[in-house]
Length: 245
Image 1 (cartoon, rainbow, N blue to C red):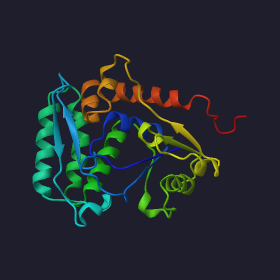
Image 2: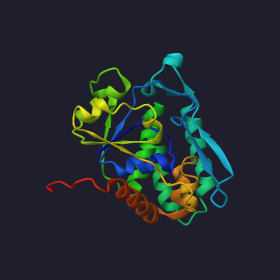
Image 3: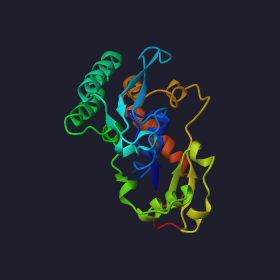
Image 4: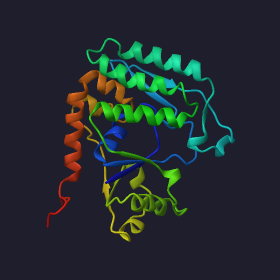
């Protein structure tokens, strides 16, 4: 089962939950960079009051203007960006009882600043570091390394086929435009993925808005991983297991 998603900087819980539910994440790294998206920025929420938020943004240079691809976007000031990320995340979550885990995630990203100036590398690293902290051990691939057709839905279907996936996890945004036929032609089932709403759980309440760093700092890796595992199982109800009839 695969999820196909652009790399986001310290992604929101809604995004992380979808990737956690998948066996493999295909990083959509060769599509147009969007400044208003989450590829180079994330909202940090105050530990005790998540309604207080601040953007953490990596200033980005687009060498080809608006046509620059995600994997072509470069840091405008690597040293300053590294320092800002370090100070802001420590400021927001350094008082958490789970700070040692959050710090491990942060340190992985800070180390990555030393050998790349590509925004996509840092965003991908931040996502994988969060998933790893929660015990995820899936496969990570890049769309730019896989030949596909040009159509939007055809391309996603080709990515799923090339990676041997039989199920494609599709978020609420993708469902608005997705054509299921290219998937069905290869026997791939599209599974809608959505996170809970109006549950009264404050982690899900902010899942579509703020970085997963807040959820990790507020609940810790064990509780958060359990919560995401429950969501994963809920989406897999009715899917036959290997060898079953």
